[in-house]
Image 1 (cartoon, rainbow, N blue to C red):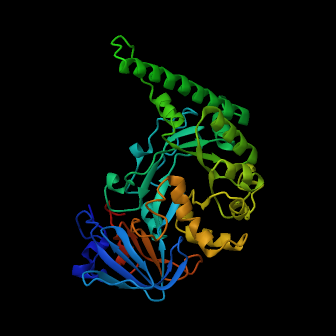
Image 2 (cartoon, rainbow, N blue to C red):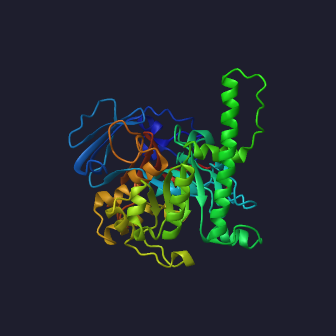
Image 3 (tube, helix red, strand yellow):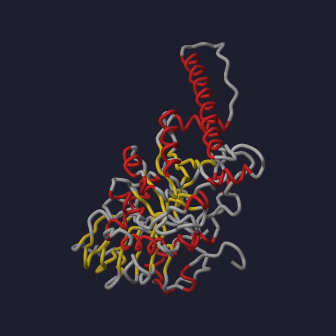
Length: 429
């Protein structure tokens, strides 16, 4: 196990730590002041010549005037930018090939945590692009794929240490071409959009019956009925019953306007809330309907035409939806794009004229809301986790690169180090 790099700064300095050096677990007790930088706070605008004081893994103070305690490590950042860590609301990193259990269209009991490959180098490469938190989802082959995980990119730590403690649970639904293609090729349902939603409704109806069966049993037990018959446990229906009880954030892969409306109708029918539509390239066609339901979208900046249901994509989608009240995030769905989400957000300033704050919010605070961790991360605010990126140039452009990346106040990426400080899990990596 290795601990984050900054834990050794007071003793060694940045340049003294070799990436392969054995270290222990993180302390999370670093006391640091990053000063004289341009702060892009997301919630308090831009602050020139600003400083951020972090201690015990949290942001303690920030602004144009911040006292520097004698005990703090000072990082001089004149000419550089500081932002909150980027948050990716749609990742498939750290899953090897285990993204879909494509043997059944309904697999809500699949737990990504059971297949989380925390040594995946893609986790570190995203970190090198400033990503500090990701929602890693199942693929879209299944109508109901399974339970996602939220993790911080603390590359070098153990699996459980990388999981975002206290993050709400998310579950992935999908509709559209992908489940049609996968199961249609197997000559089974669903092979059409009608089949997609029939499968989804059938599963939810069975879950509702299962939930009522258990509710009746527990009510009998509460009344002291010693003869109450315990229902047989079904992990699949148990997970869907948790959806109906509102215990999951429901994340839905879908592209087209007609699919959004059908998914909204099904959610109303069964009484659960949708947290976000993912991809959502036709959100601009029905933004009022999406906003009215309080549903966010996690979309691309300008991906278009790579499949039939992406033909009506336009690069103004994000801003048009945002102007109608939809909470918008730009996400990766790709290990490669995850390293450049800052540039993807920069495109939104060109397509539709988003402001700097609006564009930055799409890769920080808005995806944090989709994941359900907006009270912990996504902006530079006192009390939030010290997940910060120091950029060597303007971050919403191709000229800015992460120089240093902190998570919970510990340094996990440092461009000044050999290999940028990347630890090595296996010989030859």
